[in-house]
Structures are given as C-alpha cells and as structure tokens.
Amino acid sequence: MLFSKEQAQWALSMMVRSRHFEERIDTFFKHKEMHGTTHLSIGQEAAQAGLSLALDQGDWIVPTHRCHGHTIARGTDEQKMFSEMFGSSDGICKGLGGSMHMTDVEHFNAGSSAVVGSGVNLATGLAFALKQQGSQGISVAIFGDGASSRGAIHECMNLASVWSLPLLFFCENNGYGMSASSDRMVSAASIAKRSEGYNIDYAVVDGNDVEAVYKAAKIAVDQIRKSSRPYFLEVKTYRLCGHSKSDKCVYRSREEEALWLKKDPITLFAHTMVESTLFTEDDVASIILDARTRVDEAAKAAVALRHSVLTLEQAMGYLFAPEEEEKTRMPNGMTTRRISYREAIREALDEEMTRDSAVHLIGEDIGAYGGCFKVTGSLYEKHPLQLHETPVSEEAFTGLAVGAAMLGLRPVVEIMYGDFSTLASDPIINHAAKVRFMSAGQLSCPMVLRSPIGCGTGHGAQHTQSLEAMFGNVPGLIIVAPSCPGDAKALLKSAIRSNNPVLYFENKHLYNNLGPVGDENYLMPLGKAVV
Ligand SMILES: Cc1ncc(C[n+]2csc(CCOP(=O)(O)OP(=O)(O)O)c2C)c(N)n1
Image (cartoon, rainbow, N blue to C red):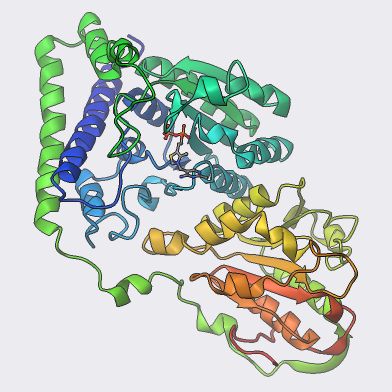
C-alpha cells in the first residue's frame, strides 16, 4: 500500500463520511425534511479523498454543485453541513448557501458555483491572487466532464497558461453531464489531452483508486508549486447515483452500473487495507462504524437546530459588505485644477495603485496601447507589476477578478466597450453580486469594473449600448455613472476602496470634457454625485 497507516485510516474514514452524509441527505429529501435540490457524489469519494490528501493548508478549492464530499474532505464539520442543508442559521453559510454553495473559508474552500464550469473562473482568480501575494498556496478548479465544454474553461486554460498561474484543473470525469454521456459530448479522446493545445502538462488517472488519485494529485501539486504553472488532472470515475433527486438514470444501462459498482472506491480500498496487513478486517469495520456514527451524530445535532433560521432582515444584511466610513468620506480637497474626464479617471487609477499595491488593473490592450479609449494611457510604465493585459476573454478575466477580490486584491477590470459586459455577465451577476450573500459574509468582492457606454458615435448597435440600468436591477451590485471630471475621479477612488463590487460606467461623450478635480484625498461617498 502506498499510504501510511494514518493516511489510509483518514482516507477510508473520509470516504465513508462522504458516502454516509449523502445517504442521510437522500433520506431527508425523500421524507421531505429538506427542500431545494441536491447532487450526490456516491461513487466519486476516491477523487475527493485523494485530492485532499495531496493539498496543504493554504491551498484553495472551488468545487462544483456536487460539493459535499470535497467539503468534508477539506475538514468542514458535518453538522454545520447538515444544518446548511436544512437552511438553518447554524449552517456553514447560515443557510444562505444550501447544498450547492458550501463555502468554508476556514478550510480554504471558496464555495461552489452552481453555474456549471464558472467556478473555474473564480479558481483562476484565486491562483492569480495567491501568486500576487507571494503565497506558496495553489488553487484547485474542480469541474466535471460536462463543464469541460464551457468556453470559460478554455478561456481560463489559456489565461492560466499565459500568466503562469498556480492552478490545478481537476476534471472529475464521471462519464455524464446530467444525462449526456461524455462519449457523445466530448470531441477528444481525452478531455485532459486538450491541455496540450494550451501548453499545460496533464495526466489521466483511475478516479476510483484513492491511492492513484493521491499519487497523481501529489505530482501535479508539487509541480505547480515548483513551477507556478497550471496542470490538468483528469480523474475518471462514475456517479453510482442519479444526477439529482429525481433522476431515474434512463440514459444508461443497469449492466453499466453493475460494472462500476464492482469498482466501488470504498470497497476497493477497504480490501487494499486488509491485504496490506496493516489493518485487520475488524480494524476496517471499526473505522467504517466510527465514521458512520460521527455522521449520524452530526445529523441528529442538526435536526435539533433546524428551526433556527435567519430573519429576512438578517439575511439581507449579508448582501453588502460594510464600508469603512473614513474611506468614503468627503474631506475638503476640491481644487480649481481642471483636467479632462479621461485624465481624471487615469489620475484616480494612478493614485490608488500608488497608495495600495493590492489594486490591479486588468483588461485588454491597457498596456502600451493605452486602452481603447486611452484611459490607462502610460500607466503601464509607472505600474508594470499592477497592470495586466489580457487575452480577449471577458468572462475569464472578469471571473478572475472576482476570485482575486475574494482573496483580498482590489482588481479594476476594464471592459473595452460596455456591450461586451454581456460576455462577463455570469461573473458579474452570478458571482460578484452574490458571493457575500451566499457565503454569509465569509467572502466579499471588492472589485471595480469600468466600461465606456453611450451612443451617437456611429459604431452601430453592438458598440453603443448603455446597460447600466440592466445591471442596476441586480441586488448586490453598486452602479456608478459619473458626469463630470470631479465626480469621475472622486467616485472611482471611492469605488476602488469600497468593499463591494462596483460597476463604473463612463459615457464616451464625456472623455474630453474639462472640469475641476479634487486632490488625492478627495473622495465622494458612493451614492452621491452631480446629476
Ligand atoms: C451553465 C450551466 N448550464 C446548465 C446547467 C444545468 N446542469 C446542472 S449540472 C449539469 C451537468 C454537469 O455535468 P458535469 O460538469 O459533468 O458535472 P456532474 O454533474 O457530472 O458532476 C447541468 C447541465 C448549469 N447548472 N449550469
């Protein structure tokens, strides 16, 4: 056996806890004691245990909607997870996340995205932040074979490779995305092989063999840490249960299921342990019993607490992060110096980057080209380490900014034309706006997204929209649209210092307008402006 005695004991216990946790969940749902939906990972436990054993404290994971096992593997208390499933305020996210969003910052779990594949954007952002912060930690993007067809994943593979990010792409290939089998949906002999095209090293491993997963993940993690390069690991496994609660699995045969049942990772590993002679059958039985008892006790405790729920007011209190007042007050710093709206924005960026090394500009052509509307100008010369030119990948680099903000950076994304914010609408609407709420305040998203808007330039209907009203309907976002240079500078500085996601829209017709601006301490509270 490859594992030490302690590792083997932990791996078996963890896999049984994952399995039994989900068996209990299934029963709660069948008895209508839990509501909503849930996705079980019965049969995939070796992938969870093998991965976690290869990670250190400080390595972050971003799991999928099928997240219970990975969450348990990273160390989250099972009772807090049951409580979360009950929607109880005693849950890991106070009942605001539920089955598909189990964030646990204490255990380096940044929470799942239920938008399949989008968690990869966030994980790429965590890797970016870890690298900028000089951390030894790595980030793991967990996703399925179904998600591997998402454009976001391809954008992230390219971005992580060109930026050399410490990111493990962990593709848990269970053969199906809901009813769609990967042999029908994936146009490659192996999903992992696609990495070749992105200059990323990769491996494929038997995902039902916990030791094999551990070994392959350890090689990957060590290589990422050493090289600060991404790595792609495809873990081939099988979901022994339905996709979600009501799935009768009509899209696959009972024979196929029976074949995989013979490769049940828990049974396989229990045999390996006994064969190793480090454990007797009694030892193994007792590890299994202890693990199941622990889960049953956690369930019992959660049942007792299930009626404690947040009030609506308490829940809404998690939508926005509190602002630090001194950061957004309005001191008397207005001057008579007149500059253009464009220069006012640039000055705000310059001052904030100088003041705070956590401020990073991210966007297309914002380097030597100076930005499409010449807003960033020559900032790249002054702040080369804080300005990052991206490939044309709006979804990936906006999602990256969300992930990076979650770890404490203050990214300022430039979207070349407001119209292209539609491509980044998933990270903006589903993630930036909701991460604080769904994690019950464990994470926030202090990022800014700047973008030119406005018509009358003769650019046609795809380069002239003003979409601020659309985003204004999304709870969790702050919208800023300054009308003069003074406000443009002061509001952008406040936006960058805000603890919340701010979308900052610049009307193209204002770029050359002149007006007075404040000095470097002059801020304008968000929500106030010349109208
Ligand atoms: C972007 C998006 N499209 C569709 C869905 C609906 N959906 C939920 S799970 C799923 C299949 C995902 O398959 P895979 O990535 O292989 O993960 P698995 O469910 O097998 O763990 C789909 C299509 C979704 N949640 N998000």
